[in-house]
Image 1: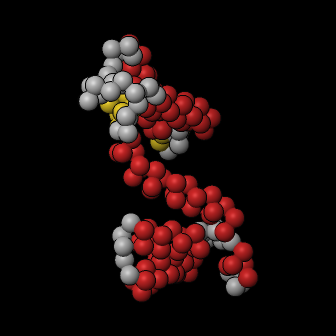
Image 2 (image 1 turned 180 degrees about the vertical axis):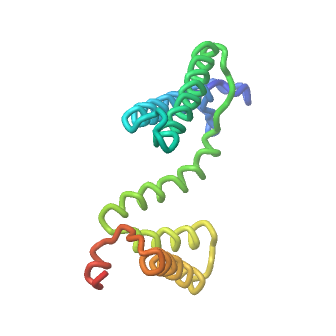
Length: 176
């Protein structure tokens, strides 16, 4: 993404409040929608999009949703490309992106940690981190909520609904 001259201060050098144009993210989202649409359409064709004796096959409705997504993503991509040179709309300024990454990076770490540690321990750590770092909650509240939420999920999903969630080495050591 390129940084436009914001016209503030007349300084030709890079500013601390650098702006990023919207056209790059718009094109990326449009292409992402197109790829998602193609995935939905191909999988719908695989399972069948016609009518069976008892009604529509399982790919019937997703197929048409995929077509709508494909049309929307294609329209956005083509519109963005046609107005590429003249577009000066600002997507975000640097200081606006910092809070986004303050949330995104811990979430990515959380998802990666779930692969090896299951869902319960990373969830407790993530909740505690957000409560302390961003919510400024006291330790007693943080510990109670960060332990209570995964415990509640365990009881509801594993014991009540009998739906197993990803488990890590700690749950295995405890016999679950």
